[in-house]
Length: 180
Image (cartoon, rainbow, N blue to C red; front, side, top):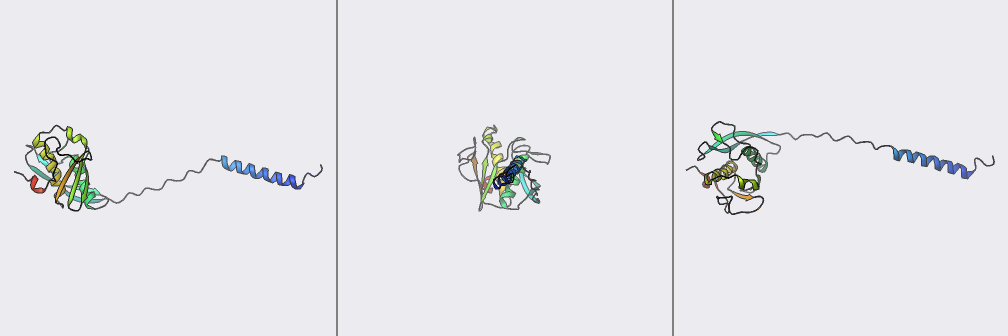
């Protein structure tokens, strides 16, 4: 047993022990981090006036609804009002502007101008002229009730001249959608 504890043997044994320790550390499964607790933003109730049509599809009828928004910005309130519009009325004697389950249009506001991006499926609703007019006018009156000057419609994210029958080339104002 010559030189069992020689400098070379001691250093080799220390390196072997360090390698075995490092191998064990690498093979151990990683600690799964705890997911952060999600905190929901507080939602506030805001009253909006949403327009639907009467049973004869000739008059606009308002319905005051309470919507919940996380931010009380004009854009978020407008989008919440349009989402409520797409969900349909709660009052008897009013007709929804779009069939149940139809997606709500997206809304953008820029100053006093509102922009509505109608989904491409709105072209396939098979409404007549009065149905299309009521669809557009219920949206216009809903958005311009609180603020705004006019509403410009897009279809599928693109400018278009007509939905199917109704002109979409120019912005709609409150006066374009008054009951006659």
